[in-house]
Image 1 (cartoon, one colour):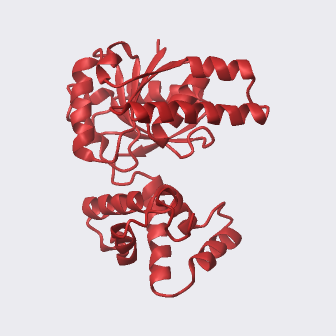
Image 2 (cartoon, one colour):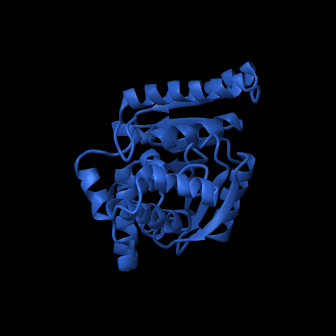
Length: 281
């Protein structure tokens, strides 16, 4: 019976994941090395739940109960009693592998270890443990409390049973699990990133301004936001790192990151989080 969820990484994704589990009645232990990140995550969760109350989607009592179900810790040692784990640290393969190896020794042998990675190989992470059958990808979309998709990634050794348990958890969270195979970028980024990259090439080649390109995709293709606005929202550094994973992993020149994207990242123009990307914030 899954009751206690461990979430590692208190960034935007981690706190969103902690929130949706807490809202659905699970006890959540949110772990991050930095206490200030945990404090910021807690206030983000409170603010996000507050918006649900304002919109009448949640009662004040439910909000308080959800907040009360989230505890924080600065060490993964606290996850010894977790029934299920979601990793949401930075997109760095070696850091994730080290973490999964540690989690393998700390958590009980039957516990599923999942990763919110958007592009790193689940097979690679599973191979760092003695339970590769219980390692899988659970890629939530940003913002987690609002987006219903969870991309479920099956590694080379992931068992049917592990996938079933994880998919049922998604359903309890009110999310829709969609299975993808463990290839670079999975489904979402395999399709999204080349589109964003092509939009950046179109800017670089003077085919249209960022405003024009975004307007064409919004008005002509019914996208809720244009690809360049979306790139700024995701973070241009994140887009670059995913394109590098696609390019390195598949070896096809069509995934080559646009030189303008590389230049903007080198300049520290990372989009919304740095205040400047294709647009100023």
